[in-house]
Image 1 (tube, rainbow, N blue to C red):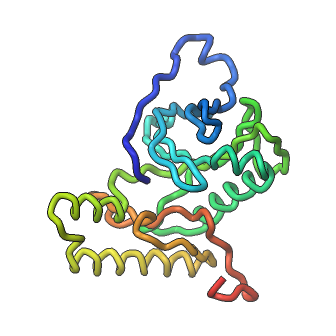
Image 2: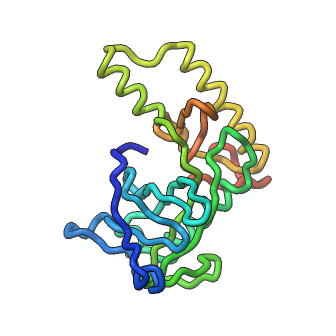
Length: 219
């Protein structure tokens, strides 16, 4: 995900800790959620955003581990609340089906409805609800951003040897996904992440589908 890592302070007063978390609030433009409160996590700030979703940087309150929380844009939530919840839940389940060190892991999923969390699998939804997906934090850049920075500083793109290495790792990730019956359908440099310790990771299963015997490969 692109964008600077902004940090927002979360109140640590006893009243704030005991009260139920408030529902996400929108900015004046009405198009982007600017604050997010998810039970069990301290949300630091907006990490990046795309055409359909917003990505937040957060920390698990108990484990103190950094995570990424993905939500859908307000316009999508309001026009199709039930579909928005189903979409996030489907992405979480498909990511959880794939066991591979080359795939970004889904850690949790849920839904905020007027500040009260509930299971999106229950089928309940409302215009005020906000489905969310918690993923592991990948401490690195996506390949599109890495290429952009290299071109800006050196005037050339990524070296061929690196591109070949990345493609090999991505193919291995897709192999694991396909063996688990998952078709990614959104393969592009901005969905491929690299970090020094764990190498190449494939993420963003937002439009992925589960494949069965009746699903053509070109779907």
